[in-house]
Amino acid sequence: MSEIKYTCPYCGKEFDITTYDSVHADDDPDLRERCISGDLFRYSCPHCKKDFMIQYPLVYSDREHQFVLWLSTQEVKDTLKKQAIPLIAQGYRLRRVATIQQLAEKIQIFEDGVSDVAVELAKFDSFIDFTENRNGKKEDITAIEYQRTKDDVMKINIRTDDKGMSFLIPAGSLQEELDQHKDRYAVDDSEFPLIDSQWMTELFQESAGKA
Ligand SMILES: [Zn+2]
Image 1 (tube, rainbow, N blue to C red):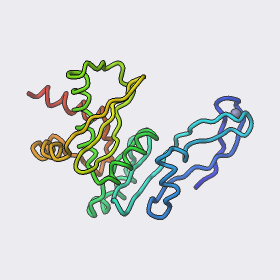
Image 2 (image 1 turned 90 degrees about the horizontal axis):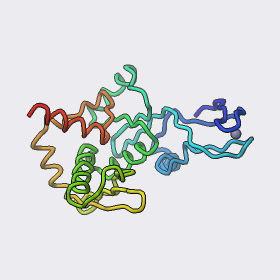
Image 3 (image 1 turned 60 degrees about the vertical axis):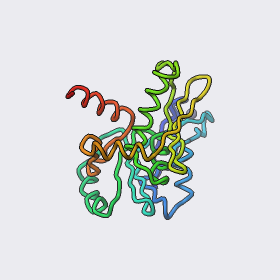
Image 4 (image 1 turned 90 degrees about the vertical axis):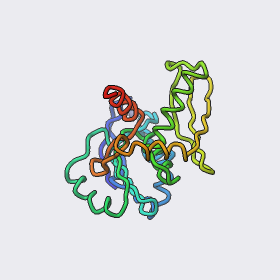
């Protein structure tokens, strides 16, 4: 935890804010909760009373579900990569997330015990289904979100301005696809890779280019 001076983007006055360098989900369930809700990053200016989000770098770790998330808009530094090696040996998944929303989603995915590569594949499949079979327009989409995995079915929600549409995808078929193309979907945890929809799109563009 550290106290830092922050200049309000609205009124330009300075005030102290508390930020966290790391969150250990097992030891502090309250902080875990506040990462998922986004509250950890929500601040209120004592001068002009405006509320806003401040994103700062954070390391989020979970021993029970074995993962570490590095919230940052920057590539991971070599010092963090070195610390990663023993964790990978224990079976940890290491990821970078670029936004507070991605942090919350990734926590949920790993707590559900599913592969985030499978989730991105499910989002991609849902996007294709939405635009090609359901008359959905690409430009109307505001978000594609992971909802949950239950009874071996993954639920993805495609959000548009006025409504949302859910897609149910059997987790088994996703895993089959991942198993069939192990090289294509391989992830190097030591690099704290950013696994998001852009990553999946680039993967498909790459393999289409090779074909
Ligand atoms: Zn202010």
